[in-house]
Image (tube, rainbow, N blue to C red; front, side):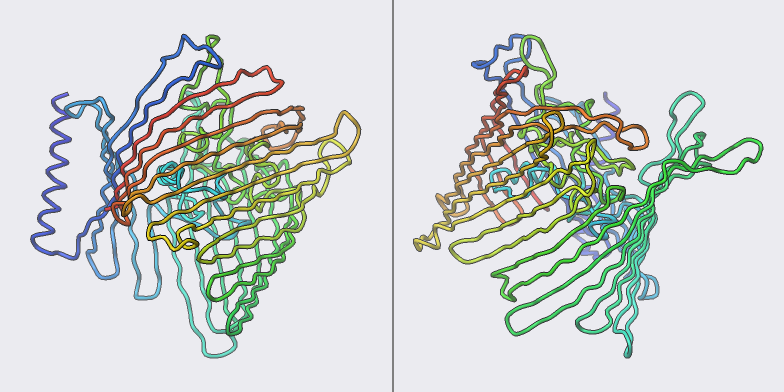
Length: 584
């Protein structure tokens, strides 16, 4: 214990000494920024609906953390970046509950003023069909009451601008021309999402790599051509297993711009295809390698965008086709992990029978441990009540249809609309195909603009609907409806001090067949599942925006789940939450 305290004190003194030396010497080659958060939550059981005398009636948890970012510039074109996390759990004293970790480490720079590179922790994104980290379920139209929760989820899981956090090498460079084409840009990377690890006493998994490249060329002021390639693969020789995945994806797109004094028009068509198979490497008798479970699939999308230059209106209309066999690990990996082994952190068991508590909307909103940071070669499990139309984002396989999105922004009222009509390309388990309808709308009314108030006051309303239907015989028919309603009120009492209230409800009713897949992602069974439930969160609280980078939030949440006509038992819980967030 004494040694731990000494080490922690030494780190603090070292960091502090560097900081004050920096301030004293004004050395611009080393500078600091970072992030700090104080978090406290007190959860309690509301046992009026369901008695639970086994679990603790209330539980508290919290921590203080500091992420200190150190930027070292040994030369003009080189930067070394490190992020050190110091975290102390509440209830721990004299350093006993303090942990110190290196959270990020990266070097980036420019070679000969032409070639940029990054080495270490990097954040990558290509297209929505090759490499893209789609937003999690139920996050489309969120209000400011739940922003502190979302901030934590995204920060702790490295979700940044739909990018995947990887460890590897990235480089990019560009050229300019005076005839035929205007610019030519290249980007390439290679990363290792997973290293070799032991599976048993004498077996180990192989290294898993992700590599790719991008080429973008602007032919003239209004025409751009782009091409992307990505490959998700294992190296058999780096482990003792002789089975390794291969998943290359190829993409090409053409974009055309039109502009006038007030508006911008953009048309884009993109297409590509994927391959996925498993390579079986024969280690004895020099036998030739073989492959299994080979599949190929393609995608096609055509869309038109219209936007006003003053950002007051944006409209997108398009058609998308994604083949049933299209597979892209970089674009179809989900953030939310619904594996049976991934149970909620807050009261994972409930009732006197101590049964596993089903995941609720509140868990998806607040539990960072339910989320995923690793790419998956097979399609991950999803829950259709949260997302059934496009559970894997725009790259969801076995879908085709039309969609319309719009956004308008005025002083008094802002709004968004997202609607689409899709159908399966082929039926699953039957020749009949599912039909999907999506309708999401949100409106924000700025009352202070409407009534010319000095203090901010606003009302936020959102409705999100998904409808899945397959009309066939009584055995294989599907009829599932889910509706999410969100209401939020925000009132500024004094400068930067807001009182807030929110109500969020998810209603789902109907039936759906859940897919069961084998080791190579092949469907081997369908499980009929019926739904009839209500999920709710009621919140009230106070937000104080100290400045742009600092806020303090206190809120109280009432949340739970009601199962109608089900063997599951209802549950209700309460939470008192405090968050102090500081961006240094």
